[in-house]
Length: 115
Length: 112
Image (cartoon, rainbow over all chains, first blue to last red; front, side, top):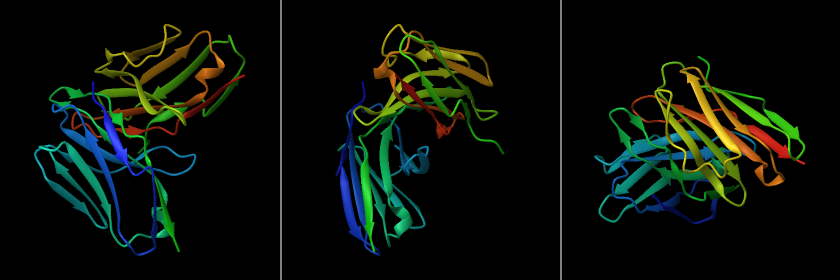
């Protein structure tokens, strides 16, 4: 089955600086890579995703890159703000014509934005 | 527009009791997923359904766990009998054909 590794487990950055979280996956059949943000006591919230036919995707201050050959993908947050503080999870799965497989999650990164 | 709905939000029960968790997916979504979150094991997939049919239940920890999806707008996850190690937050998620998964608010289960 799929195995997703995520690093670092904790990341502390100064407000305004950039943050980068990295993940690797093992199953070359995976073609869908979402990122979730989870605040304490809340549900995981989908913030951005990328599919295997794309190398990079941006949405305002966040971006995700994918390297299929190396089987790794990364989340980039620029101009970090206090409200970016949360736990971030990467995940991988297969999406096909009739639906989607379940997500395999990384262990999470606790992002701390220092004022 | 309502998101994924789960009930109850909190459940406290005693070891040996039956627990039933409920989920209503987003209307029009064709896939439904049950996940469990603990500090030790993180977020793990238990079972998922496509078009109400169970596809993969390999994540269900034991025979004490069972899940059903009798129609497109309702699913249950049952634990019988419950044990203290089942204490966790249980999330339901649903997705359309394009694959994006949207999570419900979760049920926090405590088994004493």
